[in-house]
Image 1 (cartoon, rainbow, N blue to C red):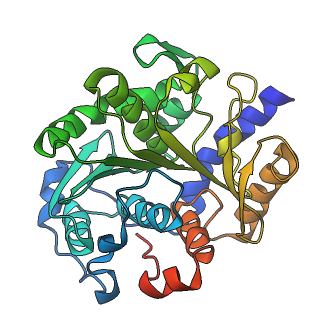
Image 2 (tube, rainbow, N blue to C red):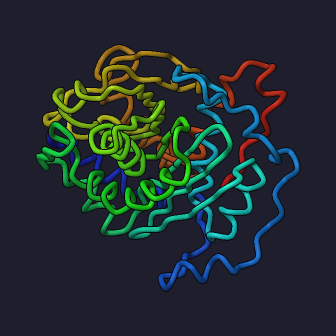
Length: 315
């Protein structure tokens, strides 16, 4: 039964993005050419929003989580030009867009912080292959990790290292969605072990289980993982890896229940997979969608935080 649920979760990972709102078809040629495409103007409410980011804290601050989630949603934008325009308007003084194997990473440099966010899984064959590869023993990260996520992190981390060299001695925050969340976390582990520069914190959304206890025990930085009700992906590979230590779990109403344990009370296979099926049948955005995570985060901000932070943008 556990293996059957794993298979169903993998299938859900691959079909939910396809059932979400259709995005413009990406050019399969040179992604650099896309940066020349005209982009919609940035809504004025988003200009300068990163002034509210708090680089001095490694805590699970909801303002930081909301801003990182929006930059992660931005990584799904159609063109490099769109990504640069919005990131610059939000307050990134130095921006680099890296695309590898159909995944975008936004690198944002400010006077007081470096931020990297990574696009997540789609519905193509390569994404399915990455989702299924969970048996890789990666000694360079000090434990057993998800092979697909690790391979994506290897493809992206060279650009991250080059960007960090331009911004020494600044706190670093990483974030990502689904497979991109795994890549962000593994890049953080790589920074810790090989660059001697651990990230301040890593925020992940809708990621499969990250690795074994050995890997998790070697991490020396804060990691906050958010999971939506109805999203089966955070429970993938129940027979391979232990559950996340703590979850920041959004219940059916989108209310944040901190520190839930997977497989117990509020978060279990039957309810979560049933919620995913229900979301598919209702059409529209599913619980695995990054935009749904962004909306749920905004719902849980204080009234003062909502007043100073703009409504999310669906890319």
